[in-house]
Amino acid sequence: MTFVVTESCIKCKHTDCVEVCPVDCFYEGPNFLVIHPDECIDCALCEPECPVDAIFSEDELPQDQIEFIEINAELAEIWPNITEQIAPLPEAAEFKDVMPKKHLLER
Picture 1 (tube, rainbow, N blue to C red):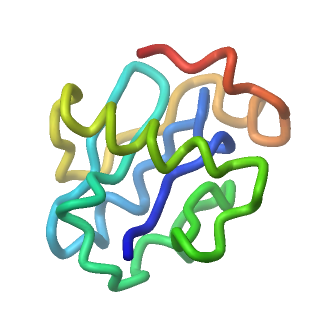
Picture 2: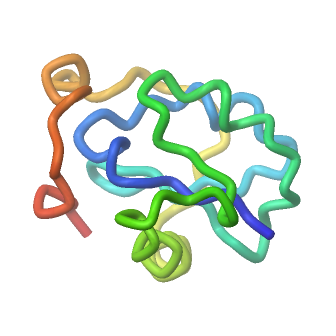
């Protein structure tokens, strides 16, 4: 089992989750974070830390976010690991409640 970062993170990229992850399984892209499914230990520490509710347990993922399982796995293989909290994107507040925004994902 793993946790999955979903569409809500796009254009926000808060990193509160990164700070609490005991195994450093987050990876950072230009405007999105992902969790490496093979590294996640299912500890659930990250989920309540996300201010935009973008992190879900794989078995509790909303139906319209299922594709993010594959997106997290794919991008975790090519993006750099992030292990420390950084400031969210400047436009995070503006995009907090914007949906859909998958089309804004920068790979």
